Length: 227
Image 1: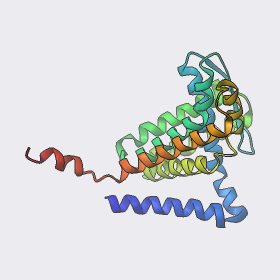
Image 2: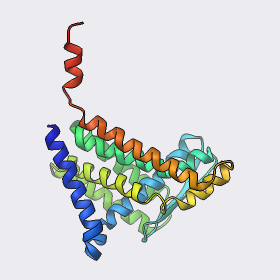
Image 3: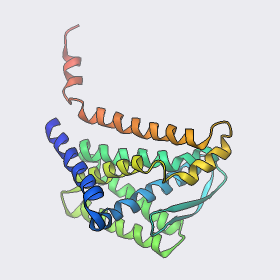
Image 4: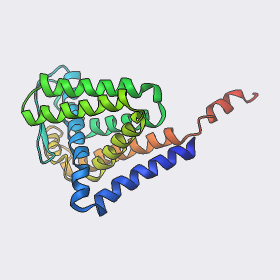
């Protein structure tokens, strides 16, 4: 079981890094949907941060170049801002974990992702491109969840690839968020927050890997040992 999981992780990493560094233009095109998916996770993290702290979301935009933005009102601004980078890291790890270990949760989680995408695309509508991308992703995930047996593999790939992309993109992707966060937390410069956020993202991934690679029988063995 553990060996099989390690092999699956290695295959995903090999595909991702192979396409990233050796795939050339074709590799960039094949990974383009992952880039858009990460942008969705990032902007959805902003949106959730606003909603959970008493605010509301007006619009969410995903651009063709992979950038995006979220317009929200009220709520706790620091939490809303860092919800983008750290929220997307959390969501990516959640997808990775469920795909790797929680087969019974694969379909429910995919349904939640689909609902989140449709809410973002229609209720927080901003552009036809944004809504079109999210609808296509929703159709793809629905097909994978209910018409194939590839749900675990797809969630694992989406989750792990997203987390790796987030970590790689730490000094570029959240630039505007870091600047805005610096304005809120004036005593610590954006450069420091950049490394704090990166550290949290890396620790989340390491903690997730520790949970996944832990022997499933270790807890049972400890519980059955005589005192």
